[in-house]
Length: 226
Image 1 (tube, rainbow, N blue to C red):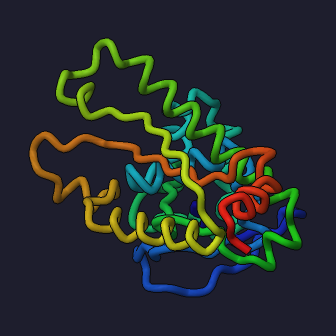
Image 2: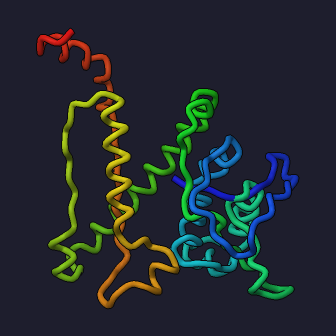
């Protein structure tokens, strides 16, 4: 997950902590403000575009998303108020405002926040899940015209497991470590990519089977475990 920027819900902007100009921070640990702001699907997509493609104006981003520039500017200001994005002073002029991402990604690992903001957390996760589903469908819509090498490596897999929460946490950390071995889709990654490299989305979903959490205890008992 990911996030950045700063503004209160009443629209008042708060000053972000100073940092070296232009430096992109690695990961933002979401707070309640960031959680609520990123629960909006347009804002989540805007942050993703700025991270992957680098600084852009509201007009450029609006064209990518099929929105008008006024609505896009509003959502960008909301992202800025939460500290997710900021002005890029090295670009633009009095008529053109450029935005850049502050963080490469966001994380939602604060147990206290998740416990105190269950509704906001659920809305945020639903937005992420909807975006994943949309991305998958768009890719499959292009399957018939996709170059053969990419059709051959495209994969939709399901692997049923029986895990404890601790084991599931270990698995998530191991997958994260594995992914760090590969080139990231950032402006820097694009500059260093070899010929033939394309943007690829690897979507991970570690989900307890809906409606079956209570069934894990009987399964253990039947196996002769305490």
